[in-house]
Image (cartoon, rainbow, N blue to C red; front, side, top):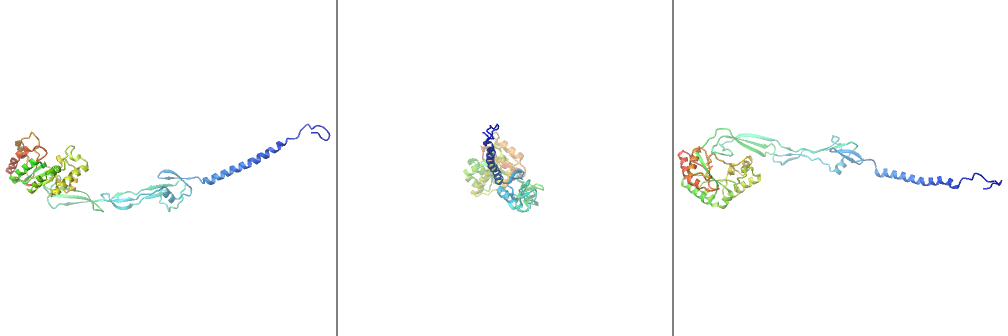
Amino acid sequence: MVDVSGKMDRHPPMAMADTKTPRRALLVGVPLLALAIAAVVAFVVFRGPPPVPIRVDGQQMLVDEGTTFGSLLASEHLEARNGRLLDVDGGILQRRHDPGRILLNGLEPPSRGVLLADGDRIDVLDGKDETEPTVRTTRRLGTLQAPNPARTLGRGPSDITTVRGQLSNLLVRSTIRRVGPIEQPNAVALTFDDGPWPNHTAKILSILERMKVKATFFVVGSWAERYPMLVRRARAMGMQIGSHSWSHPYDPPFDSLPTQKVEREIADTDALLDRLGIHTGLFRPPGGSWDAEVRDIARSYGMRLVLWDVDPHDWMAKTSPKELVKTVLARVRPGSVILLHDGGGDAATTIEALPEIIAGIRKKGLGFTTL
């Protein structure tokens, strides 16, 4: 540039760009700052306040601020089960015997509208089931009773003790206990197992009829189904009929069988005898194998167990008729229950020895009776 004096200026003026740059930056920065502030405000508005930490049954849980006790119960389906009062068989006597509770900080909450706060603790406490108490009573039986199981014909005075539900009066168990001396009759009982077999049972019945002896036959249900006429003939002759299971399971022992199998063996034979018009109160477990469960199942069908006290093992092939007679007569006593067989194998030895056994018992002054 040239001034009025015509001299050159040694210091040129500042360029125009230098004066415009800060203004442009300001124009750009203000909108960006506004956008950032708006984003922060929007984040705070939409995110809302922080969640509230609580514990439910010992587990950490986060809930929204403003959540009420009642709304949490509904959203989480929290419900305490009521404890029931049960009878001795598991039936329900009272449904709200011990009401369930839901506690807030260890206390019953005043209302479902209480707001939950940081650190609150909610506990769901189910009520407890309880079984009714029992009552035990003991009384003297008015008649002489045979034990269960019975091994002889002996009877004696007994007490019966029952345990029942105090409220329901349902029977839990009953026990008969002899409390006095046993009276043995001057007679014995001949019993025959494992029949009916077509030839053997018929021959034994003929001997008993000829010698005027009454005996007891413990029949196997599957054989009785095949030969019902032999069972009816025995009953018509005045013989006593007892149950000896349906299929005579022997190995494994009867008392180790599943409960359903034991019940089926007893129930099926009982149903068959019922169809034949015979109602028995006697059950002899195969092999004499029994326990409390076998006894109780038989009792539920109206039967008591009958075992024996004289077992000459007449089923063994090596036993001769003479040995069989000798063994029975040496062991028999007043009240004895003698175990013989009309089925399950060759009963030829038993059939041959039977008349002499009967005669020998009579020589001892003993009579014969059914169970």
